[in-house]
Length: 125
Image (cartoon, rainbow, N blue to C red; front, side):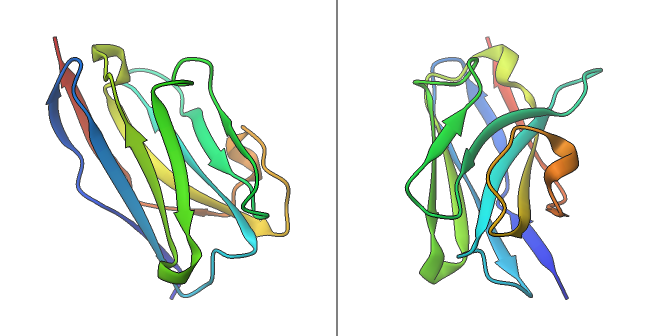
């Protein structure tokens, strides 16, 4: 059974940090671009970051660049999102996603094949 299991999010004060993890089961991530998206209240799902299947390239949304870091551990079949200097506008449900094998990373929801169930991150001011 194909699954992406995200770690529990949480409530963090503005300026704080939080790290999310996403572990895949039923498939290997080592030939797949992996990404994080988020969906804030009343908003559409938006791109946050991806790590290319090659393991040598990452990309970030302008709103999180310099504050968030995406990484992957293929041996553990897990991708991470380290979030620093959190802001109230980062409050959202965060989703892990996987592309098809050897597919180059994109910031578009439509290009991702597998999705996690989402985890809530709330940032208080």
